[in-house]
Amino acid sequence: MQAHDHNFKNVFLDFPKEALSWLLPEALQAYGQLERIEFVRQEVGGADVV
Image (cartoon, rainbow, N blue to C red):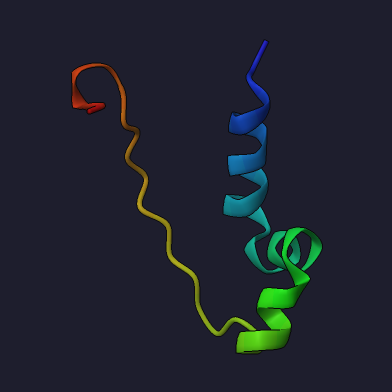
């Protein structure tokens, strides 16, 4: 079974504008509509975590 955080990450990757307006609508009010969004696909884990 997948973790919930993985599912939320996928929602943001697949539907970034919709996810932002659903989870943080005040960001859209403060900064306006997104023109472009880009994600870095890199996981932090194991020895990399400080």
